[in-house]
Image (cartoon, rainbow, N blue to C red; front, top):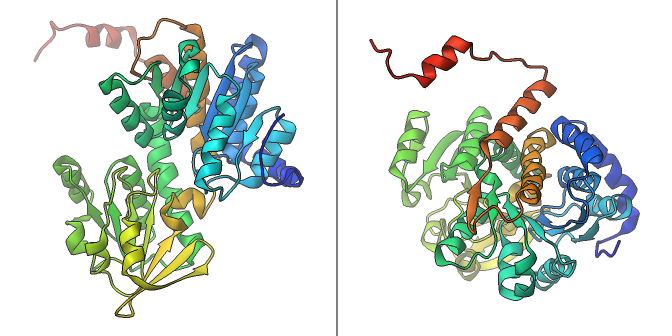
Length: 418
């Protein structure tokens, strides 16, 4: 298949890694078996703008099993695993356009490469594909059946498009499914963020002050795992309800201006711009480590850090040292991009099993309901969310109770009181 990858010779190693990830993706296996029989994507071209990882490779095999023609490009310049990209291109019949460390020009060239395949469904992670389609591929829009979006950041962008009337086809907000954000964002981001920090730095987390900016599901996960490793967790929030929840979860809550001089580690997980700014870098202690686990590298005001620095060097893989005028050093991980994917391998496959099951089944839903969905952002159908949870429980060997007929009737009635 036409592709642009680093090195096809990496494919053998990539396939072993994909197989390893696939061992913990039983829900996708169940979906694949059905797709092989029903071929829901026959004649359908799907464009995927995702992190090109071993877990993503297992989604590719499921889409291909359903009969789809698939193009895949990276949703972040530093998140591509080149061995996985090579294996997907060589062995899965997918056109792959992704190279770890690609520059911005190449990144968007690769998005255009999958647009050139004339897709009718998009599967996006951050909404760069959807936004580029709407800006530069408008001739494709009338034929689109719809799309799905994986991330909080992407859903925010798409809702903004919908509100302004710019969104020209229906998109399902996979991120908002319970079987996605309650598990992927919390347990996946939590574990992989700490994994990325530790791989990059090999620093002890126990006994440190660990600052988490944002207490959404990703921030909750990072705080939980840092606390579990023995850190004193400080949460930064602008939402009073989330701040209150963080306090009642046992964390210290304060403004970033106060936390800046205390923290040893800083993680942003907000999806917003310039959360940690120049005035905060000025307050940080020597050796402070900063990173981002949000989708884009905008959460840290890196231009300000560059201007403040008198010397800069790469001291370790994924660790940049910025020396300030007074001799203090601030360490930036993974260039401010997603630390969990840029400095580690991203979410464990067992949690991506549910996220990608949502992608696969929602793509099938778009085919089955062609023309039924209005323009805009739609929730994942409840029956899909529940079905994925049930399949995951089955795969884990867990059984649960069902309501009795009496209980069903009681919940549907209003007459019975005190």
